[in-house]
Amino acid sequence: MISIRMIMSISLWSVTTLNFIFYFSVAYAQFPTRPIRIVVPLPAGTSPDLFARHIGQKLSTVLKQPVIIQNRPGANSVIGTAFVAKASKDGYTLLNASVQHVMLKPLLGKLEFDPDTDFVPITTLSATEMVLVVSSSSKFNSVTELVNAAKLRPGELNFATPGIGSPAHLAGQAFLSAANINARHIPMKGSTESVVAVAGQQVDYTITAVTNALPLIQASKLRALGTTGSKRHDLTPAVLTMRELIPPGFIYETWQALFAPVGTPHFILQQLNREAVKIINEPDTRDFFERNGSSPRPRTLAASSDFVLSESRRAIELVKAIGATAQ
Image (cartoon, rainbow, N blue to C red; front, top):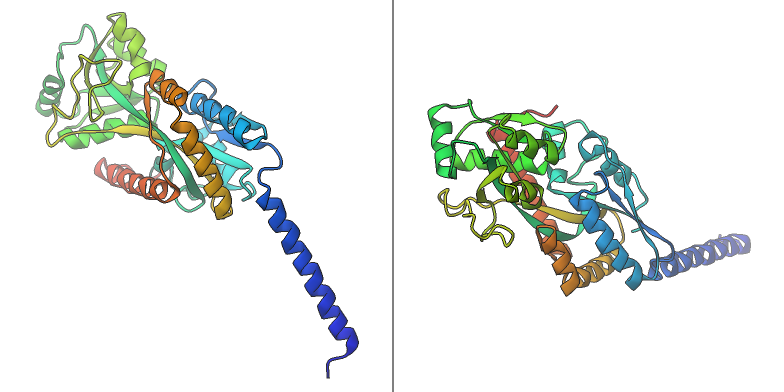
């Protein structure tokens, strides 16, 4: 038989549980009630840092809570990404990552987190076209000439990037695969070092963001041979796209996306997506992105997940194509 004491205990437990659920639901329903942190796994001044600060400032206004940008660079973006993977799944710690995010697993292998399963995209932010440049003193005057030389002397040409798994490295490998050529990868400390090495003829070429190369292009120290977007870049309108030069049409754009730890409540993800998409579509945000060489690319939660998944698969295919193994 059930005693009165048992009934009272069950009732007390039920009331306590319901109170907990109520207060828990109210706390989430009022999201956010304290500052939000966006972690950038790259140094200050990089494109993900600049874009995170622009979006963060506007988010703080609409959400009525401070949005703090925290740079946690190091280990090819692993340090900052690992920090967010271990954060509470409550929407208060987010990650602004680039295409480099999907390269971590196929190239680095052993990680304390899984980039594919420990994160959920809130929205993609932007897409950045790149440009293939050589020294202004280079004998190559077109992408076709460079490709033909690489086919005649497989593996003799070299290209610089900021390192294994960087957006420039991924673009460089995609170019090699599309053109069916080989070239040696020369890792450098950063994008600036890459373009300077090319300008000084220490390296044959690099593929980098247009804004990284533009000052040296304008100073006639670099020659732009082709851009990687679907149309000519607004900052270099006279430069042909590689889509026009490499059949069946080579297109490559780096991207940025805002992520949350997987398990973050869906309604919080929806709220953050809704507000971020509104901000990205604002004219001044579009202008800010374009001045920094990028184009806005807001997506829904579902479309963002589909996009990042397709990019993860593409990264695996590229790593396999070049014969690289996880380190």
